[in-house]
Figure 1 (cartoon, helix red, strand yellow):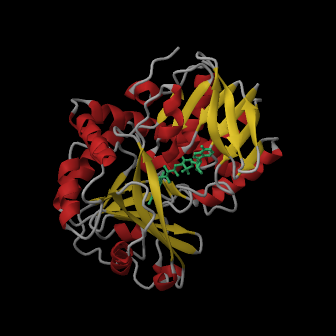
Figure 2: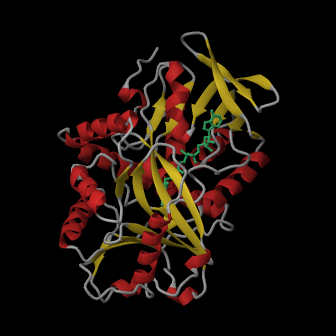
Figure 3: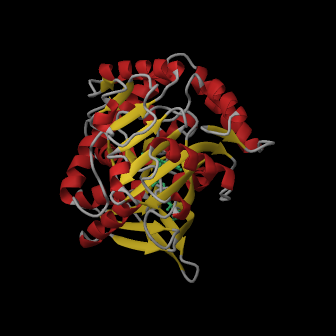
Length: 425
Ligand SMILES: Cc1cc2nc3c(=O)[nH]c(=O)nc-3n(C[C@H](O)[C@H](O)[C@H](O)COP(=O)(O)OP(=O)(O)OC[C@H]3O[C@@H](n4cnc5c(N)ncnc54)[C@H](O)[C@@H]3O)c2cc1C
């Protein structure tokens, strides 16, 4: 059986690995010149299986309004918003306010997170070196009573799913993160013990090497330009590397094209309203490892995530609705720097940090699109939004089960790729 994977971000690579293990003859086509070069390049590095939650949250309006008046994130919007941005926001609000929707999506994402956690433990055993991967817990901190109330709600959902977590008071927070500064007036902090970290881009490179050894063919600098189908079944894709074009015939095609998925699948009769939600990161080499985080911290006051990646640390923030605009304004980086100065002063030289911007492939409700598409032989594994690194290992495993009509360990209905429009033939 021939399988074609479109996209070599982290999701395409875990998918290619799964398919090779299941005995497919796998080809991966990727528009960039290497693996993990788009959104998988410099994300926050959190493998946050217990911290996943849907984008369409009922408090989105409040968060959005705060974001417009404060310098800090999380939510920012380019003004005046483009029609596509307005459409995405309306869809998001519809899902956010639909009774029961948030809780159902939250449950589904947490369950997928646990599948992913198990799948990642297996990957970590196979590839223990080279991507600064660890599972040392994720700490959420805030001094704001409203944020604390939100954490309490979150902890209830974790308890329901029997996901290990604990509350740390201001003193014991330093047991988890000894270098964390400005902890005096913190509310109790939530530690999600089983969560982890790792450099997504570096694991993408390792997975590519592992896949190549298993016989997977990679075509970089190569894009899908057109589909080949007979009206009922997908038969492959026309691809081009700029110099030559050819038909990649396949018995199964999996679209893992991140933010490009929306336009790519539209000609196949599938509506997949993926929106590119922009974020920023700064990565700096450590000056003083004793002053750096041990694992990863979500700072709810400053709206940033701060992660240790070996001898580097990374800070990320913002969820900006600005289309595909790759500009990195100095004002955004300043906010990140100020948060680092408050929480982990003196750990790294952020004057020489690598700035980056990327786009979360966000669906308006939140769960990814995972499963069968409208045509036979078309499969989707995309639209993971804020949590694609975390969910990549589990999504690939679940997709393999779906492709072989095996029972899945969790209910997958929340991930149906056709839930926004597209009827199966
Ligand atoms: C600031 C920021 C912080 C984040 N932090 C975290 C985090 O801590 N934890 C977490 O879990 N997630 C995080 N994320 C989200 C995570 O990075 C993404 O969900 C994930 O990288 C998506 O992976 P992907 O493989 O689906 O997409 P991508 O990595 O974007 O890969 C898709 C690939 O498809 C290729 N492609 C597109 N169209 C075509 C075509 N026609 N032909 C061939 N190739 C094509 C693209 O070139 C691209 O390489 C963060 C994102 C941002 C922006």
